[in-house]
Image 1: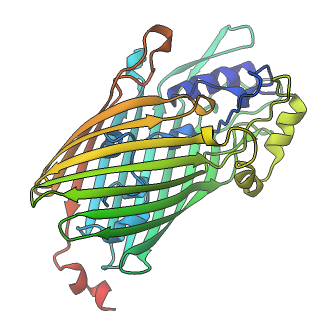
Image 2 (image 1 turned 180 degrees about the horizontal axis):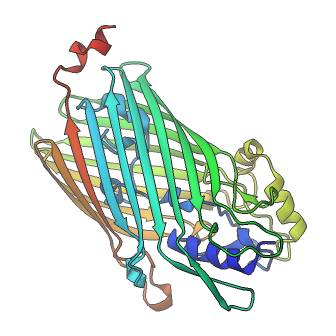
Image 3 (image 1 turned 90 degrees about the vertical axis):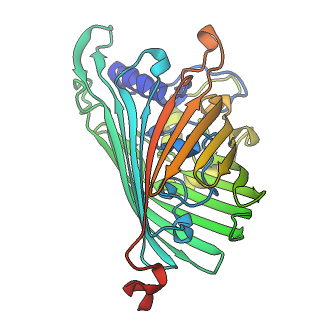
Length: 397
């Protein structure tokens, strides 16, 4: 059993990620018939890009851009430019008066030639300052929880319209290293290594009209723990996503894209008996599952349809320079109950693009969405080599 300090820190962290349930952290009563899926490092599930953020977190099959590595790096070989760099800043939970919690993200690609691309991205999540307490609630020392991930990827066209992308990710989560040790537990930073497998298919004309399809399996990796107890490790958010978009080009200046993404966590449900309880034995068995078996077990149990999250979005483009976006995101209560509308704007001039997204407030009082008024600010650079792709040395080999 984790100490009161870790419990409070975990509760704070999950709130930062927009989650409302903490059933994975303790043994207790839960609503009969309910299903719960929670993971460590949920910051990996926060949409880090302002363009996608304006379309309800839509990103699996949208057109390639500098931030493709954050959603589906298999899109990168189809990018119009040779080099793309994206930077995004997201203040987190500002609606709750928190001023020191934020997510920074950087992403980019480099096309080796017309068929291959290298990708990379980094995410840095600051949870501000937190006050540690003992089991009685007495204040102890303070800490500054920080988390980050870094990945490198490679993608290649398998055919004229189909590509495959692979990525390897390192995850570092320093939530409790500053916490006072208690009960024999030694707190430390958690680390994990994970990989992604991505597919992308595009059937679009030169004017942009047509459809894209995408599929990703992300964060396939080791469990993560924050103490010296090897049995107290939690699953990271392995995830299966499929998506599609369609673009209608009305003329040379006006285009409208709309799409949908479906997301399914590849993490088992927390065991709940017929009385609505999670026993310590069941929780131990839950945590003892191997990572590979947990992916397959994520499809067993009640209410599987409710465990699929939904992103729906649209983007209007004028001359590929001015963009208006809107979207909706749906998540079941068992995974956090995030439901929100988003809007966004974008402008591009020469090699520089600016993106902005806004999460529309919803609910009132205690039911108010804590993510209300979330803003994302993005900066994108599209660059080209001196020679075009077909004339580059890499293409001639």
